[in-house]
Image 1 (spheres, rainbow, N blue to C red):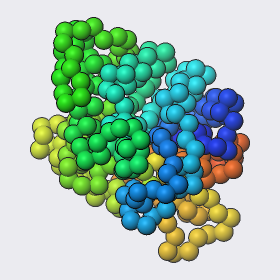
Image 2 (cartoon, helix red, strand yellow):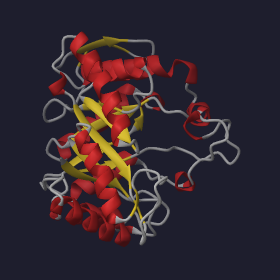
Image 3 (spheres, one colour):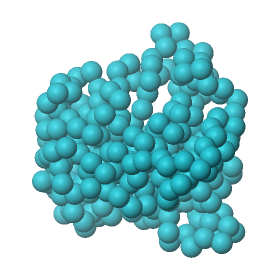
Image 4 (tube, one colour):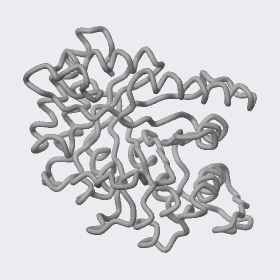
Length: 311
């Protein structure tokens, strides 16, 4: 597997300094990619629980989240080869034309390193704030994917959906090459089929190895049904690492415990078929210096265990 890292976007960071600091050190340390996520607001009295689960409180770290594409632009300006991905953008909150131009500009400026990770989101509060219909989020995600494929493809562009109409127009800039589009989610057959048919791969967050393996098998089966080679699909798994000085108990959640316990969890992720594992530390540790320290600690342990190959 390759090794990835989530960049600092939270309130504990100096955005002017810490994004570029972590990006530089991650590339020097052999990490293959950097990822940024999106939350656009934090309702003090949310309409529903986190991830749409009744009564589940939102993570405190969601109170502050710097814009992911701006953060990746900063990271890209001080690096040369490391991939730059979103995991994930809430696609229906973005106008497809403007999103395509932003992604293509970033890809051009960074030498073709951008991965567009998209999802449909789960917060009705964010949808209302953006003036977007939550009930049609699946359709909007499909249209965003199709629209991006058209807009990032060759000129002239003609494309129409329920939110956009372009007739025989030049749309520039274009990415350096084919810009990968990956999808999060996969909570049901519809989202699994969407990943298999429309995307270049699956972005997983915080899921344990056995559950990943089951879902990945279903996605691959849908790909075969659609006439695709499932080997064309990439899987990147983000893991929220919570290190403890003493071993956690048998009922611990995945990726919480000592270095050895987390290495064991990541081994299960590798066995499930992951191409890349991403360490998420922002919002868990105190600052960017701790992100770097713990990322390097985990890197060394994963290399020693033979689980990852450095870039």
